[in-house]
Length: 224
Image (cartoon, rainbow, N blue to C red):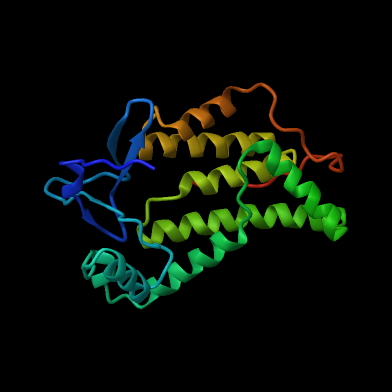
């Protein structure tokens, strides 16, 4: 583990709906700051200090008080919107139920193992993969409603794996493009993850579909 002192980035305040992200670039040996969304003139630039964002207002403030020693007064914590906590809890539920995978081949393997262990029929297999893509779409919409511009790449990459497993190569590629575009914006085109997504997109041989799928499924692509 390494530590560093960043005289400019250390001046950024915390927010539970940050408009920017600080990313360490190991190749360049520097920290970079990227806007997560358009930032208006005179609008404060904020980042997340690592608090659990998919938590209630009270839980986030308690965490920051305990670990950072301050009471968070960001817009999300000052908000009196009672539905905000419900949306954060829903995001926590969705992220817990969606099986995240490290790479395309592993994603297909996970589906195969799941089918074998549960002895699922073809209809159940279809429903499982379709349900996970629907959950990704729900999570992306909830993130947008709550004003959280984070984690879209992880969700999109997961959706791509289930599309590939269902032999829906068109939508799988669209999800990969979505993940790549987001990661370039949030961490820079030089980031390790963005480069990995680019490598996946350049590959002429996507992961093999499930052997049990004799016909491709048509799932859903990313939101516009």
